[in-house]
Length: 224
Ligand SMILES: C[S@@+](CC[C@H](N)C(=O)[O-])C[C@H]1O[C@@H](n2cnc3c(N)ncnc32)[C@H](O)[C@@H]1O
Ligand SMILES: Nc1nc2[nH]cc(C(=O)O)c2c(=O)[nH]1
Ligand code: SF4
Ligand SMILES: [Mg+2]
View (cartoon, rainbow, N blue to C red):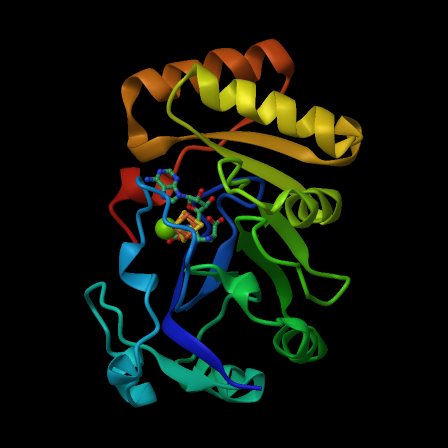
């Protein structure tokens, strides 16, 4: 199966439990969720006219909706050609779970990579059992509660974007409804867009609840 790849780059995982881990990021094109504060809006539409040759994606320097279609094996060949050293692969987007990621994650795991996906929980999570699943729940989504609950159950990490108190209340409701064993999953709060008020709220709540703070460290560092 081919996947629409918006970008591939080597960096340090900036978010969540794996913050600090050297990682190969694979950003898939396409997301219909439409979060108003999304920092990757250029990945939302998958237009035929934006499909380009792989070499265009490799040399991409600026955010754009351009993508290339790659299989898992082609992706590994690209990692090798780029002489990438990181052995942890983060599949993000866009919304990667729009696609059945079984074949891609099987191939990468067979090749010896550890895998993490970043998903909103709005689609069924179809991945190899050994994949670390980070769910960043989009609770305002209508009609998807069953799917979101299943994604929450599969999650190794819940990384909740927070702007204001109501976002914490929404997470509390979702945790209760999902009947999660809180000792079984890491819960991280991530301030939206590095806002000072959101960051303070996240820090205070994390201390109160013994949760983890996830700041987008790559943005403070000014790296990809
Ligand atoms: C761009 S999304 C892509 C993966 C997937 N669609 C999702 O939402 O999890 C990756 C992560 O960035 C977070 N994110 C997006 N925009 C953000 C922003 N402005 N501030 C903080 N986190 C943000 C999302 O909540 C998610 O945890
Ligand atoms: N360094 C770095 N860490 C990240 N963690 C999650 C990211 C994402 O966009 O999904 C991201 C990203 O874009 N860059
Ligand atoms: S689900 Fe993820 S990629 Fe899609 S709009 Fe929301 S934050 Fe952006
Ligand atoms: Mg990002």
